[in-house]
Image (tube, rainbow, N blue to C red; front, side, top):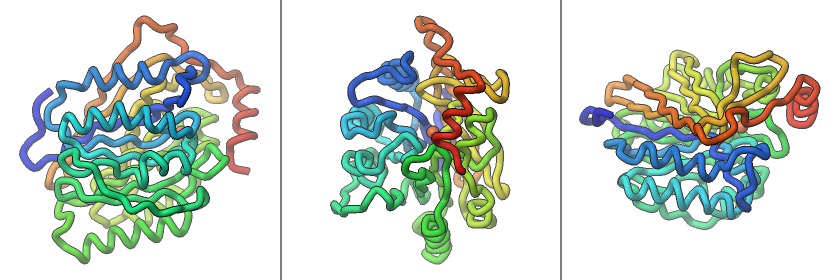
Length: 309
Ligand SMILES: [Fe+2]
């Protein structure tokens, strides 16, 4: 791939790695560690990556071991490539395990240097919040997860914090001259299937109100396990393909199935706010093509357990 233009921040956007602490297969069929390794190997020669992002569902089981496995692989990749690394929790993550290994999610700073964190205890009820500066941009990670639920929500406190961060940016005038990148798990966009619709972000309009007219250049999300793009309040929203599997968006709306397939996005964010996104697919021809299938009754059971009531 061509190197990024001068001044452009190239982001490797990974999502839904779903790593397990004990190597158990995701949905009983996919070795997600192998899937992650195949994606990282495929992008190894990618020039000029300045930031690696994991937009949630970093772990399948929330164990510290699973986060350590991600850190070793993705952190190692970012360090070797001189890139920063940030991660945000999704609905499968557990804030306790996440914080124990990844702190506030801002793991590596500009140039791939470790970010120092003061150890601060937060109960799991408190959303993970992080912001840092990379190449003249403010990178803000916003926790949309709701403990015990599959759907996403932005609490009033989190929205206020985001509003303050963006106002600060305008006021400080110089710390982040090239704008802000927001990273979250649940996309503020319509969902492709009934299951994902039940597990969607509940209040995208609240996010729209905060980012409208701000210096946010792009919102990076995951959760749908399928590459999807749109806009919210005029800001591009990019959903990365899943590392774990690829949702079948052509099937029945009330059923859910996914193929064994992995991918990532390469997102270039220019100084003037222009954004380009290039999907990278890493098919796994050795594996059974179907990752899982849920009939309508099984989908209703998942919705009853993890949807908003
Ligand atoms: Fe998710």
